[in-house]
Each structure stands twice: as C-alpha cells, then as structure tokens.
Amino acid sequence: MQLILLSGGAGKRLWPISNPARPKQFVKILQNQEGQTESMAQRVWRQLHAKGLTSSTLIACCESQTDNLTSQLCPDIKFVCEPEQRDTFPAIALACSYLHTQEDLNEDEVVIVAPIDTYVEENFFDNYRELARLLTEEHGEVGLIGIAPTSSSSSFGYMVPSSEAADPDFLRIERFVEKPQPEVAEKIIKEGALWNSGVFAFKLDFILNWLNSHNFPTQYEDLRYCYSSLPKTSFDYEVLENSSQIIAVKYEGNWLDLGTWKTLTAILPQTIGKGRTSPDSVNTHIINELDIPILTLGTSDIVVAAGPDGILVADKDSSPRLKDFTGAYQNRPRYEERRWGWYYVLDHSKSLDGYEVLTKKLHLHHDKCLSYQVHGMRTEVWTVTSGNGLFACDDKIYPVKSGDVLHIPGGTKHGLKAITDLELIEVQSGINLIEEDITRIYLSWEEVVKHCTQ
Image 1 (cartoon, rainbow, N blue to C red):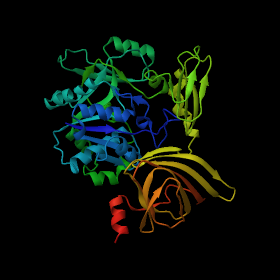
Image 2: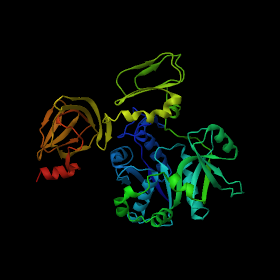
Image 3: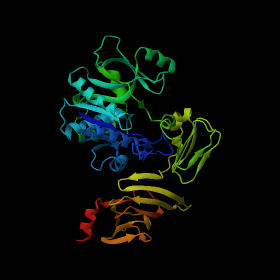
Image 4: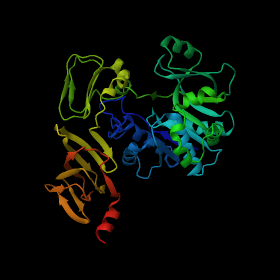
C-alpha cells in the first residue's frame, strides 16, 4: 500500500493567519498530547507515524510548500511538486506517474489518496489497510471512507449506498450528491447516505489506464511537461461520477473538516495569544498572533483572528464565505516558514520614485543556514539581535554574535549559519524588491565551507 497526501490550498480559508505561503494545514494552532502547538499537517504525520505508514508516504504539493513540509514534518520527506496548481485530479495523476516511473511501483499496488489536514482519531487510519485489502480482493475499482453524518449539513458531499444487499465488510455506492440543501441531505441520510471523507483508494493501474485511454503519457517527466493539458477538475468529478464499481467502508468515529473558522474554533480554547473575552461574551473566540491585546465585550458567536496579514472579525456562521472576500488582499505574505526557520515582515515602504525599504525579522534554528546567495538589485543590512553564527561573505567566513551589524551591497555573495538559535533584523533597500532577485550558489553549509577554504 502506498499513500499520497494532498497538500494544496491558497491560504484563504483561515485568513488572516493563513496565506498562500502558509495555507491552513501549516498553521500551528492545534495542541498535541504534551500541550505543544502543532499544525494539521504535523498532527496527521504524527498519527501516520504511529501507524507505521510514513515510510510509504508521498506528498503532492506546490513548490512554495516544500520548505514548510521539510521543516514541519521531516527533512527527508518525499514529495512531488505540481508545475502549477490545477485541482485534485491532475495532482493525483502526476503523483501516480511518479510512483510508476521514479519509484517503480507495481501496477497492482493499492494507492490511498488523502488530504494532509484530515482531523480524525488514530483508528481512522486502520481503514486504509482495510480498503487495500478489499481492492486487492477485487471487490471494486475505487474505495472510499464514508463518515456517519452528525447533521444534515450542506457543506459536504454525500455518498448514497446501493439498496441491494451488500457484503457486511463494505458498502456499494450507487450515487453521489454534492453539497445538497439541508432538506435533501436529511432525506438521503435516511437512505443511509454518508459524508465523503475525501479519501480515495485504487490500484495504480486504474490511473495509468485513464492516462493511456485519454492519450496522456504515463512517464513522469513527460506528464509533467504536458501537465497544463490535464483537465482542471477534481477527482470526484473526473473519476467518481464516471465509475460504477465504487465501494466504501464506514467510519463511526470523530471526523472534522477544519476548513472554516466555525469548525476550527469548536476544538480550540476560547483565547489563543494576547486576548480576553468578557464573561458575557458568548461563544466568542480570539486567535491573536500579534503582540497587542484584543478584548471583546458582550459579543456572541464571533471569531476575532489577528495575524501579520490582517485582522478578521466575523460571525461564525458567515466564516465559510471568507474566501469570497480575501481576493481583494493580494499583498505579499508578511509571515513565512522556511527550511531554516521563519521570517516576519515588520515594515515596508515605497517612495514616489520607486525606492523601497523592507524590514524583516528572521529566526534561524540551531544548525540551520541561509543559502550562499547574491542579489542584483538590492542592498541588505543585517543586525544580529540574539545568538551566534557564522557569516560567509565573498568567499570568507567570519564569526558573528548579538550586536554585530553586517553590510551587504548588491552583488555580494553571502550566507549565514546559526550556531545557536539566531535572530536578526534584515533591512532591504533598492528598486523593485522582489523574491526573484536572488541567485543561490550553494544550499548546504558544507558546500560553502569547502568553497571558502579552497
């Protein structure tokens, strides 16, 4: 059995603490058993590790998420990057071609596809092996996990089982109803309908045969080259609605879709960060990543979320509409996690003549490093505020410590390694301050040391 985790998202659902560089699955807002904060992705990875499934896991993602994945989950994690974000079906097809070509996976092997932000208990993942068994025994060509509905919600897709007698181990699915009105949902629930969990299982050759029949290559590099030609659609629409051999196992435990502030706050403490709700604030939550306090008085059923990218005050029932409004805010994310740590934008100004000044706070984790790099259009000044490290500049290496100020003119080769946890203030100045103004010479510090000592 091979597992593919889908890690997509545009960072709109939990704005302002999520953004394109930190979609909701990477926001560290949950708590583990030790009371430490963790992200949805870290929770799923921890549960998969407990079930012995991480070694056979591949993550389908976009290039901008690779730093989050390696820093939060595992430095050696396997992932396949989409050339562009299209939808779940193209991402799954590309990942399957990778398994076929790069990993030489047997075509009879069962592939389980699941979201990286599933919020369930550990026993949910036992169903993965059950689906693998059922498909290996040829009971169907696609397997799903159905969730016992707790309400007639119109936020989910439903699967309706066949009325014919089925095997006691699984259900045969007759049809799907996507996000029905509550009265329709209530009716089909009485027919035994289940929520669709977003988990799909099939044999590898199921996708390879689809690619062949639609004149797409099965080789990974070839499919990647023509990726933009794949239909921009979901697996549900492209596959489930066109398959007559779908089975499902039923999961009766806790399952939550944490895609809105309403559902997320149901499992969060009333206040996270600097904040306070008055005794007459009913069902009100504060999530505050800023260093300023938030106070609510006499409020009901609202969420106040404050982060580097903005402040949200929303009625919880209205929070599912959030992504319809965040398109107006396309500013550069002010907080990002990277493989070496994180940075926070403190200030950004631009004069009438186009001259810009961007001020960041950077945190490098112990023993991590910035790449050895050069910028063409900007000057940087680094002020080390805490910690110790090694600064590489034009092929020489110098020790640095708290209080040191480092001037880096445009065209200067430079890099930094943290000996201890290290923080600095970076001031960029120049015309057109863009992330693309960077040429990375070496990524590892070992390469930097070897080069600078030659």
